Length: 166
Image (cartoon, rainbow, N blue to C red; front, side, top):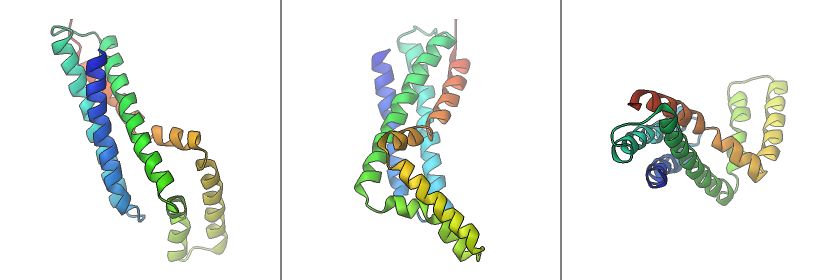
């Protein structure tokens, strides 16, 4: 199981991290960054299906229980999410000012739309609070981990259910 999980987990992780890195230039508040980012997460999660299927065919001799399929899939999802987190940590800590850019987008949007000053002040205060929280590497990693992991969990459940064979 270890060989299959590592192989497909790293393939999925490279896809997730690569497409996350590809969206960094689009972090301008537009929906392009979200589309590229989440497309990468979904694409990398599809690798879980192929990993579970590979395990079933090559290790299980064409048979796999839901539990074993879930175990293989969730381990692939964890490795993939860890690669995604590692790539984000490199981007976040090697790009000075990226936190300001990301967290101040809401306030800038409110200013551009002519929102009342109290709404802008509230958005700035929330951004500063979140920046402080996000500067802790463990909190940063945890928030980043929960971006791709739910998609991986859902894909794991679907894959384990569809591919189970007695």
